[in-house]
Length: 357
Image 1: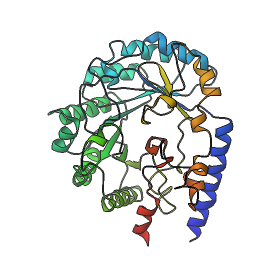
Image 2: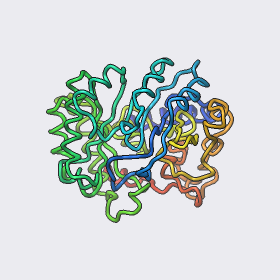
Image 3: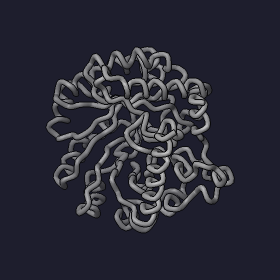
């Protein structure tokens, strides 16, 4: 009981911090979707990833970053598959010249030893590589036979080049049986950080029946993560992703921080067409586009817009208004918020609480 009282107080402090951020946001992470093109076609992808995808130029990156040069957030390069950009290293060179730390998310299939060495020379700070189960289930999810072997090659190449990659695994009904075996594999490879998340009802995942974990599977997944985090023989950091308020029993048990959705408060993104938005996982609705870097000053947009993300959603939601934990949750993640019904699409706090009754 004492630990939950302590967590409640900590979550109250997080809620107070959220209120401060609504009035004075602090840009800590800036994502650039440098290209909307991919060499895979993943069943769960939140992006359309057009074959003739749009892309940002080196000058687009420069003009955006120069507006915030005095207060440098972490720059996160993504796509699509960012390594498909024809001037990928030109963009990275610009980011480095301006003194920003950078990282990227990638499917890993285009990383061989030479590319890994190039990334090391380009001073990459973080890299997240997707590995969604063992070979059969990964290739099925990614829509490409051989994707798993290429991703494992990419991870091995990064490690050889002196880079510590994080593995990100999207857990769904088709690969949940692989999770324990996958743990053994990546642990043996020397991976130091593993981020495990569940598939979300966004993007292409909405078109696929039977991908979402059922309640029992979701509870098992959190239990598995907890067991590894408190296993003294496990040297690898195993963590749940940043999404979702998970109830008092699981907050700070499956990740190192309490839940706080940073969309529009701590995080902003630039899409491949130049649109300025909060988080790239959020549905691409016209009313959520805050401006465009080709016409607008990014810092002005960040400082003066994003109103949709800087008020208390729970006050205006019939589903959230009377919830006893609305203060801690704040309406949950923006990428799983129903903007028409004004309520969360997912609410996990009651589901996970059943595991501890």
